[in-house]
Length: 298
Image 1 (cartoon, one colour):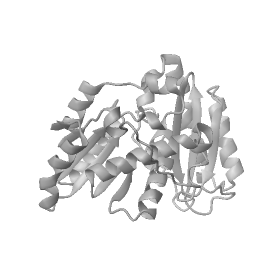
Image 2 (tube, helix red, strand yellow):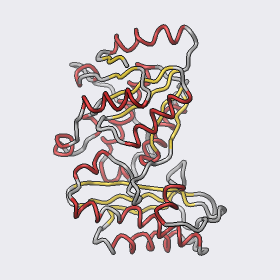
Image 3 (cartoon, one colour):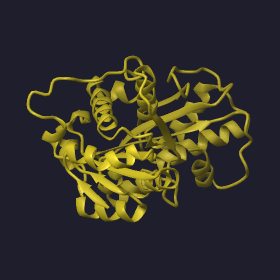
């Protein structure tokens, strides 16, 4: 695996592959790689001729400087994991390579970004996300870019940006990867102490409770969200939001008549976590553990 640190290096390294008509896959990450990231790299490896992993902690998408400062950074370990998972190139630029002196341009998707994560984290969060992703897509020019379903709103926003701007890249949202007890893998999980790690199970348990309610025939959005909230309260966790929304527009729904996105966010200690799944009233849920139900649905 080659390590590239500048835009010029990245473009030069990909020129031969592009001229040869090889398919290029991009997995954008902020490092602190875990099983979820590795599943994206492995998916790209299975589907593309050349796999590029970007490793860049994007300061523009953090609305709290303390959150940026404590974001885990494990560059040497990340390099080893990316190589093992099948990356051909690791693009690891410095901040001033992405945001050089005088940088004054941003990309913004309106509407989709003013709710859920946008409502909590502010307009600057998604503006930072879309701007850096646009830059990465322009630098690498991949055929396919891979994102995790755990960050469902992010994937929806990026897909809208790509469609609106007629960009020639396919955006793939891959299933959430979970720990054995159902907790969604996240770089932020490293900040949880043992007591908080147990409390964090409020997230998958909330999704499982709503899934079980749908299995029992419940279709009211208010009831399903209340069911999820009650499951979280058992862990003494108060959600920042619980929302049942259209999976493409993020518009709130009142009744589950077609597949919808159930999204939740909460702070456990000082760590902010998000999770989601698609609730589908037309597909019977097979009898199995709640954790397994989540793993199959997310």
